[in-house]
Amino acid sequence: MNKVEKTQVISFLTDKFANSSVFYLTDSSKLTVEQINKLRGICYEKDVEFKVIKNTLARLALEANDEEKGFEPLYEALKGPTAIMFSETGNLPARIISEFRKDYDRPILKAAYIDSSVYIGDEQLDTLKSIKSKEELIGDIISLLQSPLKTVLGSLQSGGNTITGLLKALEERAE
Image (cartoon, rainbow, N blue to C red; front, side, top):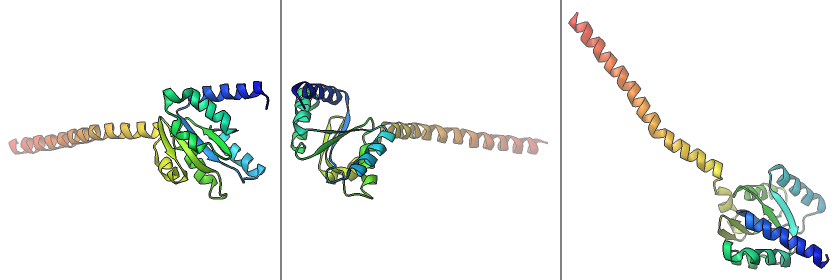
């Protein structure tokens, strides 16, 4: 890779890191080309961008955004082979990794960055899988907001039946 190509890659990564609120640093070494292609296909289907990069280029791109985003804890993870998974959903790469590892022993999670939070190490995978997506959180909020409304409506409806029943009983007595 010549200097111009390196500059282009750093520029691309700098922009990508600046505009991404979710990315995972993984080690997918020891996977065969066929397995890597399968992983790439799964990522593509789920709208997760998978890039294998040089650590030095990634570090330079991270350093360009460090003051704003707080990437410094990620630098230690940039050792050995590194692949980056960019996503819009915080838990999706973790779910892809877990599912893929049912058949293969890689990729291994080195670190993850989710909305300014940094997770270091493969032992964080279960924690990352349990993070709710934006859509799941919105669904939970809507359910919580609907619950009291349903209770009030149910009470009003049952109360209306009770009042109607009382009025009928009083009407029958009056006759």
